[in-house]
Image: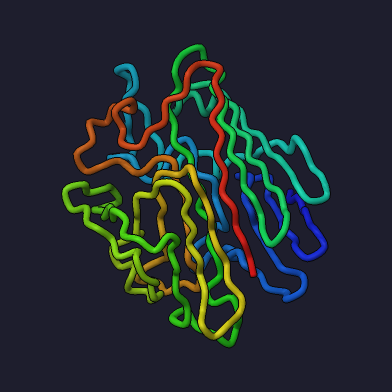
Length: 291
């Protein structure tokens, strides 16, 4: 099932499975900004990553001396959410723990994903409530994929990513899907990043982020662009498939990150993990601006 929300000049489609953004269009230009999940390249649009971001070492973690298995990015993206509110220009979805989730993640939780259209874009709200009577550990993140090119007469390499502010950020390289902290460097995000498929030959580009950040996918040959803006996310991932040359790029705001190559495996010691007190609620949001 899908939920449609719209304003005078924007329209979004949201899937109940994964509470996933499946479409975002400008009505005046008839441009689709969200990747349409062609399985020949990548079968998703914009999955929600919870309760982990990225991969665990050996797909395993330990909590209170018990071992659990979780696949990359967690289970929320593959579960059906409940629609708890729907208005003309907004909708909210809820996921609660089940007997099945408790087998791989031993916490009681309530995850609410909210979408609202306004101005030139879409705001995505995350709310995580700990309904366990003890501290809860989690990560959460977005994974929206944007069509590149946005227009048929352009090509992938006609586009750039403009970071804002234009300053250097710590780059965290991946090794076999895990963060290699020993090889972290100062990433050159103080200038535009020209898009080409070779950028992703070593997997995603991952940067540490603090404060207000924006990343814009644009071309000098077009007036149309898409911008991801966020404030309270610790990391951003930039990804496309390789060696398959796919016509999309993901801009991914994350609160949390993949395991490091030197991880102990203990969930409470995981780099980037969030700790939430009993009955407490975590909030964050990001926005997608389309022009």
